Image (tube, one colour):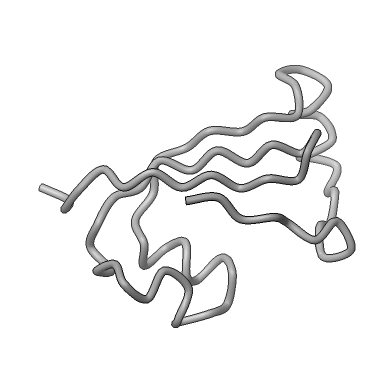
Length: 75
C-alpha cells in the first residue's frame, strides 16, 4: 500500500534532521499496525488489518510517500 504524506503535517525535529543528515531521507522500520495507528492518531488507519500484524514501513521524505507492506501476525 502506498499513501501520500502531506508535507504540511510533517514536523522535522532536530533528531529527524540529524537522521536525514547521517542516513538520508528514507526511513524503514518494522512495527505493528497498533503502533502505527498510535503514531497517526487514527484508529481506522489500515482498518482492514489486525492490530497485532507486523508491517514494514518505508517513509520517503524525498517524495513524501509512505509504503506499507504486510508481514503477518506477531509471533
